[in-house]
Structure formats: C-alpha cells, structure tokens
Length: 470
Image 1 (cartoon, rainbow, N blue to C red):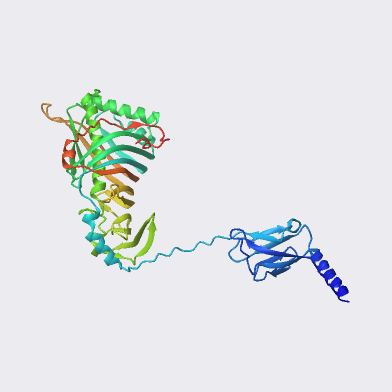
Image 2: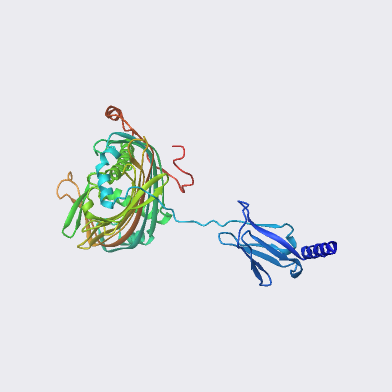
C-alpha cells in the first residue's frame, strides 16, 4: 500500500513540474536575489516574487510570443520573451539614483566670521612680490552702428564734398567685429610703476572694408594730402567745446621710426591692459571688487559648503548696499580662507551720463576670476574673463578748422563743418590665461629689457589654438 501511495505522489510531482517552472530574480551586479519584484505579462496579469525573489511560471498559460516584464524599486525595468526563458534565473540591472551631495564639517561659521578670516590672511595668501608670468590674452569686440547721419556738410576743400561724405556714410559697414590674441611674458609686482612686458607674438582678425568704401576712403585721404599741409593741425569745435588735433602722417613716407612707434604703442597698450587687470584684483587697495576690503558695503548670504575639484570651499553670495555697483559669488577655501574663485556682475551702470547731445552708458560688466597656487605657497591670478557692453551717441554740430603756425599772415587754412547724429552699441570681451607664474628677485626684474618688436599678424580666420606651442 505504501508503494502505491509513493507512486501517486511522484506522479503528481512530475505532472506539476511539467506545467510550472520555479524562477528567481537576481541583481546582475551583486548576484543577490531581488525580493518582492513585480512580474507582469502581456495579458495584463501580474504577480509578486517572494522574499527570496522566487515565483512560479505556469508554462501552459503563456503564449511563446508574449513577453514577461520584471520591475523593482531601484532597478531598470526589463522584458523577456517567454520563448527565450530557458534558465531558472532572470537578471535585472540596478538603476543609479543620484543623491544630493552632503558635506559634513565639525566647524560651523557664519559669513562674517569667514570674511574676517579672509581679510586676516590676505597678506599671507596673496603675494605682492615680483613675479614672472607667462600669459595668453584674447580680446574680442563687436559693434553695431545703430544710426550714422551727417547733415549740413560744408567744406572749403572742393574734393571733400557732400556727395563724397554721403557715399562714405551709405557704404559704412553697420556691423563690425575684431579679435586680437597675444602671447607674452609679464613681469612686476603690484606697483604699477614696476611692470614690464615682452611680447612673443600676436595675431588679429577684423572686418575688412569692401572695395567701394576702400576707394572712397582713399579718395578722402588723397584730398587731405593734397590740400592740408603736413605741419598743420586741426582745431575741433562743437558748440562751447573745443580742442586741438595734431595732423600726422599726411605724407606718404612710412619711416622706420613710424614702425618702431607702432610696435612700442602696441606693446604699451597690451601692458596697460594687464596693469589694469592686476590692479583691479579684489585684494588690491583700489579694486572696484571690494567685497573683502570693504565688507560693510555688502550683505552676505548664509555660507554653503561644496567642492571645487578637491577643494572644500565656502560659497557666499554678496549683495551691494548703498552706491556699490557689483554683486558677487565668493568661493573661499575652507582650509586657508583664500578666495580661489570670484564671479561678479554689476547691478548698476558703471558709467552713465548725458550732456548737451552727448551720451554714454556702460551698462554691463561681468566676469570670473580664478586664483591658483603656481608655486605651492601663495595664490596668484590664473584666469580672468570680463564681458562688457556699452552704447554712446552724439548729436552735435562739429567744426574742424585747419591752422598752421608757420604760415605767414592768417593761420586759418581750411574749414569743414557738419552736424553729426550717431549712435553705436558695442560689446567687448577680454580673457586672460596665465600658464605659469613664478617669483623673481628685484635684481632680476631690473635687468629685464623690454623688446617691443611685435605687431599683430592679420589672419582671415583663427583656425588653430594660438597658444598650444607656448
């Protein structure tokens, strides 16, 4: 009798195994089971796996062309064709869940305490000694002539006629752009009198005048050459305003001295731009970004902690009070309390005036400053980018009077008068990358000779990184 019962039991088990299949859901990375997963089918039926990730698949109730779907919290939903389910284990892939970074600190400081620490460590963090800096300068400018009208034109020079001026006005390019890139070594300290520059190379691109405007400008230039003496000067009058303009270079000679002067002027211009950048850094006495040196002029936000690279930093926003013009975000190293990044933007016009038909509005100046430890001791400028926008207009009568001191009798020679109505909008950007900065001695600085032998090379389009081999 016992043998008969055992036979029927085995028969039932065999029959059950032929109709169902035990399947387990597992994590494809850890190989751990995934409990309480949802198993759904194409026929809208569904079930839940047990605490071990197991469920029974009833073979006879499924169409081989249908699909089975597995989903679980923290995992990507995955489908399986019923005909492809051969094994007793199905693997699903975890879904990455991005959580907000939490920074823990055993010190809780308010903004005033942090700013006080920054002030106390300025001398230690930022060196004012002599240094040698390897620098790339990029300058970009865009301008648009919104309006340009010349009316009531009169001239004692017959060739410079109203029709010539009208032709020049009509053919002026309304939109212009230019770019200038320079590589150089810049030497000195924070004293503007102790700064030198040696240019390595420079290149530029800009909108060239079309053939018509070139021809008209040449005609205008020839008229001046033929009628204005080389030792003359122009006296400019505009209503109650007046000034003198020296006339230079009306002869055709392009002397060696002129080339030297051009190179000296270009080097001087680039040096002055770098002087202005360095003298405006936030730890300098006369800096317009005086968030640290004059903290009473600003309201500081509650500090937040975050990372810049491997640096744990305090992030503090500053808003101006009273007449201050800039708002900023300060990134302050939590170990040495140095500002390693500063983002700023004006909230009031930098310069704005309107007087007797002349107006100027410098309405946007924003930028980013990065400081780095090149010598692992003090911080110095490593990167700065500043964007600016302004517009200006003139609506006034203009009178140009040629005078010559060596001509006997009446020294008034020629006269040109007109009414100018002009408005121009301009955007500019300067970007400076410091590749390296190292300390030098006062004696080393004194021995440096400025060699101003570089003028920018004109290139139609900048297609390569100018500084790669630098």
